[in-house]
Image (cartoon, rainbow, N blue to C red):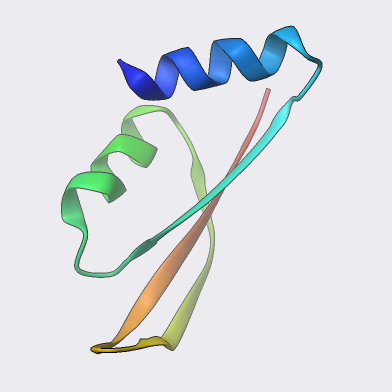
Length: 62
């Protein structure tokens, strides 16, 4: 899976904290973050304006 490849490549260069974000309407990406054990760090209301919707911000520390 692409997400695992990205994590593996970043670990090779010494990166151990991974951040991400997704729109509230992007249920598939929210599932990807959950499946890879990212934790939700913040939910921001009205973050996007076209259309207005929330964002979820994630963090994974290895």
